[in-house]
Length: 227
Image (tube, rainbow, N blue to C red):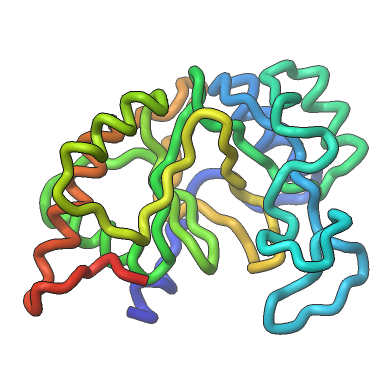
């Protein structure tokens, strides 16, 4: 499993000299029309302990350090090039936050170990996936936009859904590469293909159906996608 988690495809936004965060944010906002905004980021010069560096927000007990909107709030997310340039010119290392839902991508996330297992299982099933965002603690499978009503109807008819799944839909957010948060570096496990066209995204129903099947196929009858 350590080998699975250690595999990273070196695709997508390349690390290079210059404003890497700005270029990545512009790609998302201008080329792909994904609304973004800067995350709160990490406390300057903060100590790195078991939980990583502290969040720059006022909450000393923040459970998602650096990986959430604060000022501006989530409603400020935009695809406007001038605004994106202004934000990351003034805060060049700020995390890139995607405002999910509406016309923007949504996501289904799992704990990192379960996410690695899920991708292996879905590959064996021949499931076509879109981009996958990886952090040291969670992996997120990007899916086509869905409404809360659609998600509710989908989950209602399921006999069992892995409790480890989280849904990032309308009104939510997701941190995108190449951001750094309190838990570590954010990267693409499955990177969008290069080019100006917005990445293809699977439907949430197809992804959830595949994840449920992968979860219930454990030899001992338990779930492969547990925490």
